[in-house]
Length: 150
Image (tube, rainbow, N blue to C red):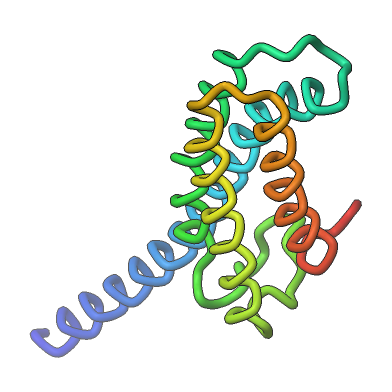
């Protein structure tokens, strides 16, 4: 009787740990997708200002640059050390086979986002736009290599 209780308890723990592991993958993917969505929400007006599609507003530019800087530091947290199994994502499997390169690109994004936030405080439109281009370059470098276009 005791043996079957022990076996049942161990089986339950095993099933629960698999469910938690899968849940962590799902949650990590949802977390990073949500962060990317919020980064994009703040990035779009900066891009529009940079391209002259909307008037440059130094205060708005600085506010959104601060947000992107804050969010940038959280992105890597959403990428587990192994690819998520059975989770819908635009992330290419190459992220996990070249994780050091991917991490370096993500850190470049953090560095340029922080620089944008700092530069934007001076409210110099030309410098803001130049730094925004550097930040956008880090996005492009990572997305071209590690994001599916589908």
